[in-house]
Length: 580
Image (cartoon, rainbow, N blue to C red):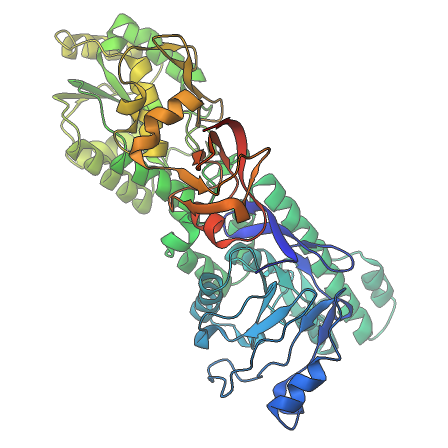
């Protein structure tokens, strides 16, 4: 049971939290030796009994207590299992990532021999092993591993606490660290930093080793502050994509991490307030992109429309507010009611018009060059093929140009290609093509299609039909029943917010249900009150809260599996609750 650590914010596997010592440590953070009381290695005692007896005298409830541990190299299995020591304060436990069973409860888990982790595959495997086998509301401490250059990546992997051991030791070995890597200080003709230590060293013929270490420590402190701010802003991933370019090993670690789809997806919020910048090749594989594409292909149902119009994306989001898409809409005129629109873009590939406000479709930006590399083309075409296989369009119009048209046309998509563009001639071609194709097509109810699509996207296939069953009407962003009671509201950030009435309709789906104990919540639902929760719930999801005495709706603050396994923290921000 975690008593002294609490997660308060998430950005993928990275978290902001509080370690409640004598003075609270806001994580991710550097932890210094004066905040720790360690009983030391078992090998420094004559026996296990002696070690356990000595540990009783070292417990300090105001500091992180680390009981005796077995020190072994990275790939050596500890020969002894030490029993749990009961403490009345914050407790840390040294674990060995490659030989880890379910460890006993602790507030902080310390990775044994972490300083030996250099190989990208080993580093990733070690972190994931520990994270999967320890409680989600505990902290992970990776000692002797952090540098200013790799800190952001470590935090993005899921590390909460680091120390300055490595950079301080490197200082005495004349290794000079910055955000952009490390050098032997004698190889630098100028010191790139202007901190007080570097200014002092510039005046010396031979740099003082203590000053090098102090500089390194300062750079690590600066980096941890910047990383915390990136998590607050929800843009740590973009930052990591930039800084891993420092070494091939760090870039490889990020690429390997992106292959761990389950680990990332279970820990990544359903939406963020910040813009998602897709500036690197790694952006194509980030979990927000792959999750969006998967949900479009698995949950979204294309309307029974005879005519599909493929359009290019726009710089302004959502696309409908851009100049180009307003011109497209004007060219379509009343024929727009008879066709279905899909936007082709990188990195999201296929964006149905109904889902253009759903994160990240309305919250991303890419470098616009008109060029599509081979990986982008392959991703787009695979998603487009999968989308068309699940639809029943009889005619396709593609108002696209340049390399996008080249990629789609060469792939063999049977369509009428109108050349793209927004000038008068281009729009005239679009109008003629649509008028000819849609002359006998049925009129679509785009408002209901949008509500159905968004509901299916978040709650699963067929959920939109349940919400829209019977007499309903769409008034602005509200979905109302025949009695004009609101069932749900489409929010500006692209999500859907249920009312109690709407939740009653979706409850039979069994999706996004949070089961609570026999109590009526008076505020937010804390994780100790959660009995069970849908594993598919992600931070930011709208959820249905039910128990023997309560039925309500709210917004998830953590994933469903975290709600069940955590003993601290807000699980659901309640919006409305009724007594059963």
